[in-house]
Image 1 (cartoon, rainbow, N blue to C red):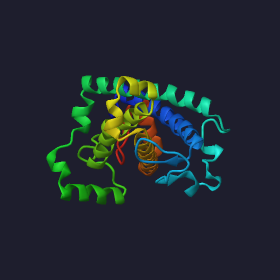
Image 2 (image 1 turned 90 degrees about the vertical axis):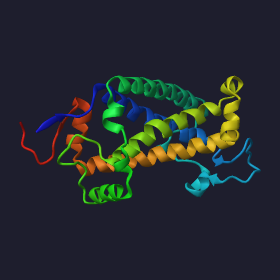
Image 3 (image 1 turned 180 degrees about the vertical axis):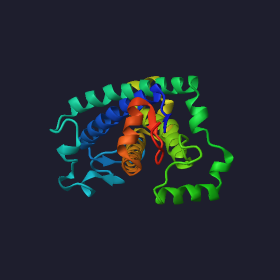
Image 4 (image 1 turned 90 degrees about the horizontal axis):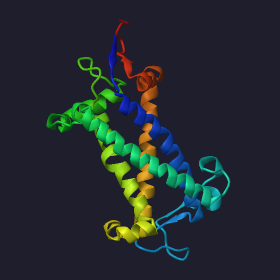
Length: 237
């Protein structure tokens, strides 16, 4: 049995984001190579004590070229890639939010009800995931609670936060909105939060891809291309 699962706006945003985040992560790691230490507060230099050093993770104190965009050290080019695709991410998120309000995707698919947040219900969802049962047989097209929580966190918290902290690191934007520096505790704090959120998004992507593979990659990817999803265990009709 086939059901309609993903609206066109959701599918477009998904694939735009897939490309955008890959470029942003790669170019962001190249930018990090320009000064591979992270600090808290307004200032941070080679003589200050960082809370994180790239050298703690990678030999040589820099992210290797196979993880960065471009692969050879080029800060200017990495910044151009990063800023261009940051604009794509920001405007794509705005368009997706508007479309999702119009087509009621948020209210229909992502609204969290009180009963879904009960500890017993969350524990049940965890057990179902561990047993590789990701869909409710009674409502196969509906998102489970863990999906809702993760998608809400990404759409309404992580992506807006990574955009806001990125803007806070811009001296030009600081002149327009200096209060953003106070909000995030200084430029270096904004840089650290930006990095932490980027790593959280990376962790989400890794888990997301793993679950897609476990749930059946052909069916899941096809549904994100065509919008139609085959209910597991049901005959074709």
